[in-house]
Image (spheres, rainbow, N blue to C red):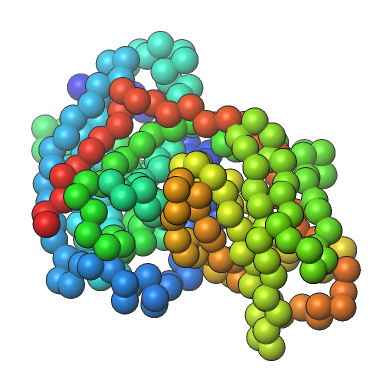
Length: 272
């Protein structure tokens, strides 16, 4: 099949996950994550899992793990014509990657490019690098989805809450769910915000988080998943050091609900 050149899978949700396909906040390496990974020397698989979605064919060509990261590559072959709704879903599609233990892996970086095949036709591939595997999962699950993005109008969909010494503080993120701030730690060189979010969209919800100090919104420099307990994901976000005496707020966004494209879900059995 010839790649439909007009159909470009614009990873709009990738803008949500750090503002681009690769961002300093998401690239920030976590040594503790690597140290706790069960992967000593890593492995490379060629699962060749194929899924079809309205005439479009998706193939998981490779999955590679190291103590530092996990990487997969999916090729996309598109027909010349597609149902408009399917075409739109593919253009807006993103991936949530989790394992059989419920651990979610955030993106480090990704690329989405055209390539020429040996027969002279073209397809498109999507390659994503993630955090290293945690523990010893039996399976890795790639869950395509649409939705989750926030409306970009200035201030209209901002949700803020004052931070005092009373926790937890819960913020309504709209139809996607809620976010709970469980604490703030003030250190000499950094400020740590801890969050709890229920459900597998936690990694999507946690990205749109800012610490507001004296009216100025600050981006986090590191986001790390600390633990998962009973379906609740506990995150740690690191910001620049702030004076605890300043008026502090946390800010997030109202977001659209997430729809998983179950037809394209891929499950990879991992070596024990």
